[in-house]
Length: 120
Image (cartoon, rainbow, N blue to C red; front, side, top):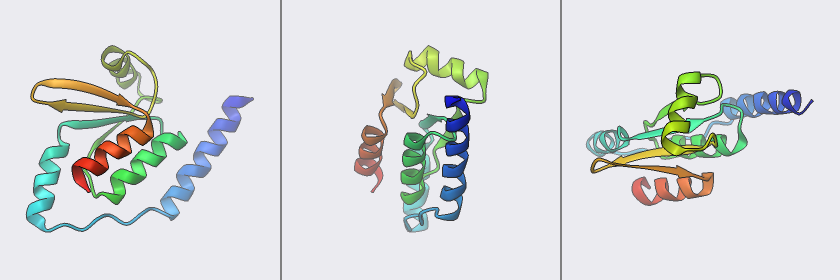
């Protein structure tokens, strides 16, 4: 029964997000190119209907970031990547690769704070 409720509520959230999607931050083409290069080292592991994942995806949209989204709910390979690297099947999870070091960041508020600090 809980699966059905989560499925229905998740799809309602996705639908509402589509209608009320936030506007992206505007940057000069040069600055946007730099931001796009910086985001190539980031990947967000998410569940499409998860409200916490939606919170992070909306922040990514607001900041105008091109972060690769990895669906850990519907793609078994992505799920295994998350378990192998992050050690937990918990979303959202931001994979950050900097200077050859990989960090797995959980918790939507922490991820949004990181993205704000780095890109706002």
